[in-house]
Image 1 (cartoon, one colour):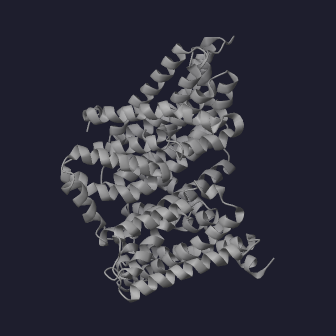
Image 2 (tube, rainbow, N blue to C red):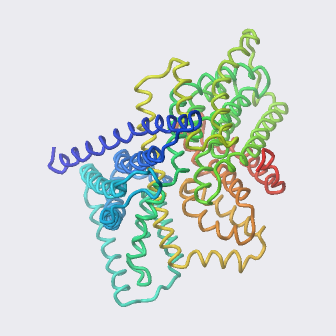
Image 3 (cartoon, rainbow, N blue to C red):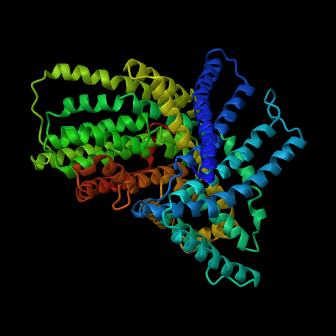
Length: 627
């Protein structure tokens, strides 16, 4: 083993221990939130210090998870072209992303975060709430620790990627080209040459190029922001001095604390074999009618959406379990794959959707209000799916034949009820407590975690290994989401300082005085962006630009947020780049062709757009459950 790989080995071990510690804290956070909620609601005994310990644990989870996610390459990237790269090219992209994006941004962030922490230490800052925690500098100091660990892991990734390179010429050529471009940019900056193109357009062009090239999304946003701050005299690095303070604001956001807890709940349910039991029993229940298996897939997709909310997990699970059964029963590959992909994306809209939590935070709306508003659109979508399947099956008997079974229907019904009631009870408790205003989304998510554990115990599928898997994956996913949020915050700071916000306001308010034209263009932009990038980047980068424009037109922000969520769900299915299609094809392998998948999802995309149009024309539908 070379010296560099030895260093990489020890750095990886450090990241591994950070991830394990964060995973332990995920479990601790769940227990602590449940305990705190019980003490306050049952015994009327709350504690400010205990609540602050909760958000400190939440902070440590995603901050320690940043390096662990980097070690496991979980920081999401647009892999449309990246997956086709040779191993050599992938290694070069990995090296360049660490050298040009991760390390420079992390060093700057560390410097500013250290200054913030030192100021807190000098002032002996304490909680502003009576009975809160002291030594506030300790939690602020975690920002410094997190990005020190991130730099160390970035070095490890460089060593490993360099070791994988069989031929170094591609790397050195790439670095030479970058050096030449760097010299040209420096020369232009030194002589104060004016931009030939508006810097806002250049900002987006460079971002899109790097995203499509396969660089990690979060670090693209962060690195591009740093680059434009450096080369623009009107900005300078001081424009990013507020970033640690903005990040600290994210750390104290109680709403966002629900994100890791809902992810944890979903992953426990994923591993508890709940989906498998649901699909088999529901398939038997509805299989005797034409299209019944596809209808059962839609209903199970809706239940999974309301209990796990993780699109990738739902699509993969149903692809592995339902698709072979549907093909065995001579279902059309197009209808089978279309119904699975469409049903799996219901988690984008149906509460407790992670999309709605993030939209609520970015648009400054109540998550409970968004959850209530999303129920009716979700039911409309489910109804349209089922109606389409039944009509197609009725018109063409060969597309989705009925299943002949000798098993007693009363026995099948009893088995189905046993499988359906537990997750429905969990959904009722989690969403009911939020809708009734009894508990916050964070408290309901923690209760949901406990409920998911009890369901797993009831199905005799609970184990320490399962809990460990769910906690570890929660750390990775949570860190990925919050690193994108940090990168998007840096991007937004630079974007606004370059005049991007004013440009957007002028475009929509000046050149487009009609609010309906604004809504049409905004929906179209989000729909197209959804082909290429994940909903998280859109929520963190695009939505904040639209928020002030929505306010200026007097548009109902809750209604607009629901339109965004429905739009993003449709983009998940759109060929050729829809993420749900990649999940389905990856899980299905050679069972269905890509052409069959594309053919199958197109009717469901039309149904999603029809549902979107219904909510546009009848906005009061979102308030049927009350405001």
